[in-house]
Length: 161
Image 1 (tube, rainbow, N blue to C red):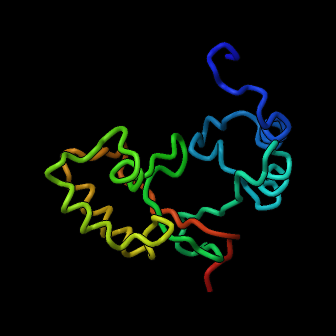
Image 2 (cartoon, rainbow, N blue to C red):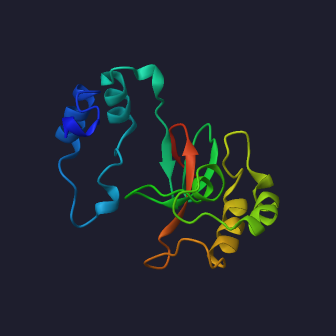
């Protein structure tokens, strides 16, 4: 793959440790195969990156009872796999299911709730956008019900009380 232009040697120590810690993809749960199970492992891998200052460790949760501290906000998309983000595909970098130009004003109005991190400020706002999105003929469709997850993004995980 070196001839393809991919930077195969970049972050080699972190990649090696990732594979050592995670192993190969779990065939029973392919959606978890590239997410790190603990903050400790995430910080360990971050320290092994060639340029750690180019990245930051974030926590993700799709479970309303497991919240993140220092929350940035909520995205909507695939929990894993290719990590498809509805916000990204609709408004930031449309790639797969871009909305038609005649929908731009409607979408702009619906995305006014996005915060400074370009995420929804709460789960309810994300759910409203997801309901709208699911009803659009141009939108990505779920292969199985519930495939689109509302994902909280932020600092460390904590259980809600």
